[in-house]
Amino acid sequence: MLVLPALLGAVQAWADATHVDAEFSLRHDNNVSRAEASRDQFSDNVAGLDLAASRSLMLTEHSGLQLRVGAHLREFARFDDLSHVSMDIGALYRIQPVKSYTAPWFEVAAGWESFRFQGSDFRDGDQWSLDLGVGKRITDKLKVRAGYGWEYRNAEEREVFEWHRRTLRLSADFRVTPALTLYGAAIRTAGDQVFTATPAPAFRSAAKAIVDDPTFGARRAYRLGAQADVLELGWSYQLNPSQTLDVGVRRFDIEADGDHRYGGAELRASWLYRFQ
Image 1 (tube, rainbow, N blue to C red):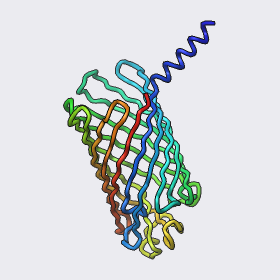
Image 2: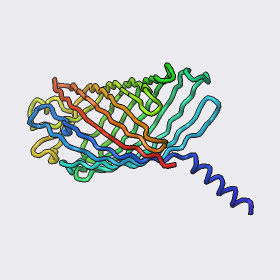
Image 3: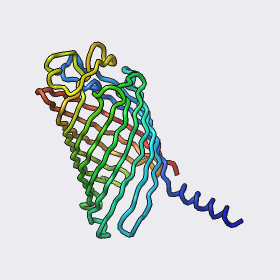
Image 4: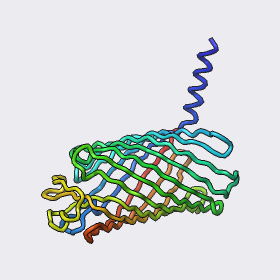
């Protein structure tokens, strides 16, 4: 008779230590087609819903493990073919050799995510990632982090949306008040990027893979070797222990083989709710 109460107690303890988050977001992207020429560029508004559950485990006095699983929905207002769902799982191991508030910590994260698009099957695929990072609190208000990662994505049909990328990321958070945090990140990615363009010899000669993309009319998607630079800025305001508002802007600039280039910006607002 003692086994059942013990088992129920263990399940309850696990549930109490598991965080469940829901996030609703709205985003405007002024170059959702990822196009170079103005005639190929299109904007769209995107609604997002994210559900995630995470569990943190202390392994030793200096290290811990975080496990995460999530489900995501993106609904495009104009280009329905780009609407999609995805699921992901991930794990992060963190160690802080010196137990001090301002001492650096080191982490390794690995993840997998699977994408399924509403009307663009050749965009379906799975993505794997591995990231190494180091972080440090400079003061009680300022926290910085640097990371280097690898990303691989396969495609179930064709090869355009199949790539390898390497990413260097620098980020910082500054806590202005107990409720308000400002944040920023600079990201550089080397690897494949996908361009949308009206068919042209200049793209065909530089592309690693090509596919007709009816999502954007009589245009094609081209995968090219490229370098991407991204700048992110935003602020996060905690309304209460369960709710947070977040507003951010993201500027991207991609330069690819064959002297091709495109840029754009995204504006995002989101509401995060943490279940207690």
